[in-house]
Image 1: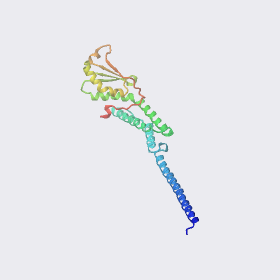
Image 2 (image 1 turned 30 degrees about the vertical axis):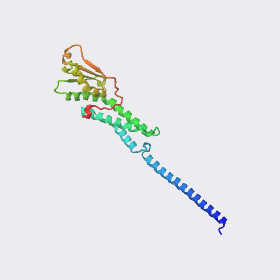
Image 3 (image 1 turned 45 degrees about the horizontal axis):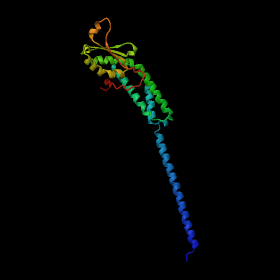
Image 4 (image 1 turned 90 degrees about the vertical axis):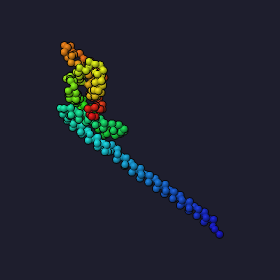
Length: 228
């Protein structure tokens, strides 16, 4: 005959073992979860710019390059290369727009790169405009155009002389081919003349003004002379 007390003891033993197993299962699950979170945390931190990630390393290299930049502009080719460099620096900086404010090392470095690049732009744009005028003269050679960059106000005024400008439609067609490039380079005014006007004592011309684009304002130099 089965003893009731033995049955009860057996039930309690099984319940105890099940509870013990359940406690161990929960403990193991929590331990595994903590291990996984730790691995994920290490992986994420390895990509954090504040931990000197690959992105931060690249930013430091850009900072060194911009800080040591000492270009001499003496031709359109060197001017063009400077525009390419400016485009690269300004394109690189926005990669860090999403960085949180906790990453102060990245944000400070980013601002330093931007300030240095703007300083170079401010310094070089008058020379770039000068040599862009020479570039246009060479492109229009043989077509009886005369192009002059006025040597005042940081070379921001360009004068085109050609007899076709007596016809408004031809003048506007020409204007539409050059206006965007000139605006991006910071020219503030284009003057159009024809050779008959140069014989007059009083200077006369047709002019187009651009809204002022300061030389220290960041912009994309997406001009045709670079794209071609």
